[in-house]
Length: 260
Image 1: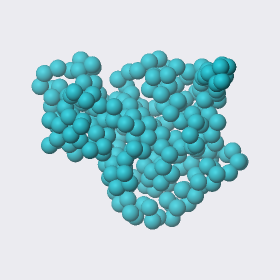
Image 2 (image 1 turned 180 degrees about the vertical axis):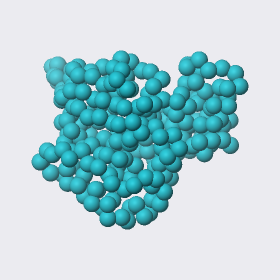
Image 3 (image 1 turned 45 degrees about the vertical axis):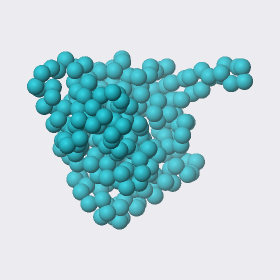
């Protein structure tokens, strides 16, 4: 379970510029597949359609053409088969960390002791068992993102979607959470599709990296480093990492459009 199929996906926006209505093509017949248990990164310049594709996959945006399916079912609005982690944690400020995680579970119909125990289980998974009683303003940025990840995972989705989940964090916290995400994937085997502007992050975390430009796939590259990926320092120093990073860098900085 957890296969995502993006089929001939298009999205056109209308915006007002100098008093005139103009059309913007955000996605242009985009197609790709994320296999179950796979981690795929979307990378590319700002405005290339990465986040739009992710939001359509979540059901937060509608497509102008084409479709997204999860396990063969077409996405038509949000659903519990998909969890979303945003660039900013988007926590409810009047709720504690535990209550924020419980919120999605309550929407799913969970109640009583099971509700509390499940929320605590996922806070423990992201290393926040001892901070369950804190409100968002009492948590660091990295801790808030951990709560956001716990909230998304707690509903037990088959697919985890992430929009630059570590982009707003300092370098050290970002690296810590990258390592934590690798551990979470190893434990849960969730299918993951995430957007990033960080080239190193895409290679470290993903099984495949898709370079996007002008709403299309420019290149799809395999990341050959085997899992589990425990030693981040060794990964960064490996020949496979350097070669893959260079291929993706070339695709980001050259005009030839190829898919491999």
